[in-house]
Amino acid sequence: MKNLITTASALLIASAAHAGVTGSYTDATLDLFDNGLDNLDITGVGVSDDGTNVTFAVTTRGFQNWTKYMIAIDSDPTGGTGTNAWSRPWDLNGAQIEHFIGSWVDAPSNNAQRVAFSGGSWDWANYQTFSNSVSGNTVSFTVSLASLGLSAGQSFSFDVGTSGGGGGDPAIDLLSRSDVATTGWGSPSVSGAFRTYTVTPTPGAIALLGIAGIAGSRRRTK
Image (cartoon, rainbow, N blue to C red):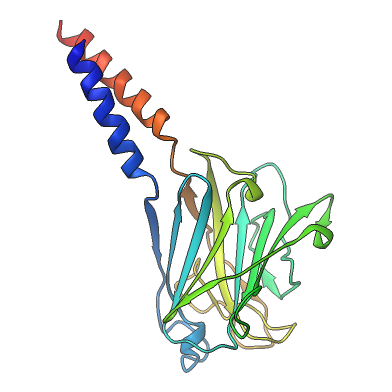
């Protein structure tokens, strides 16, 4: 029994260290209708959480401050919309989303928005403004899990797009596609299969699973 308690304590420590694991999602490069637009060419996205907040870190092949970033999030499989809060010509290809993050990098702060889809429309009366973080070609966005209706152990699907400053500009590149997302500035973009991320389970849940496994093993070896 003493050994079991010692092992459980070790599991608690290990599970706490496990929090914040990053999901890395790579994207093909040079897959744009104009590969000179290196600031719009997504190379990868990292997603991580600390049990309270979730961060999306979007890296592109180049960087320009006129780039716009869009993240479509499906956190509820029972509902949502096939549109986006910026009304950009972006076909989600059947996906239904409940949350949208849109951002720009030509302002130093208050340069990102999180909008929820509620009551049949995008709830601009209660949208959240926050600041992104820029490091080289990587721009990061952090919002609370609660604001996305998520808690420990739950999964969500998402896609990430880059665009220009025109209200009618499509997503020029999409994380969900390894080929051309749009044939030009005047053509709608179409998503591929959304990527999936699972929120880190609580340390207690990981420890309980470990204890259950140890107890089961002890019973089997008696």
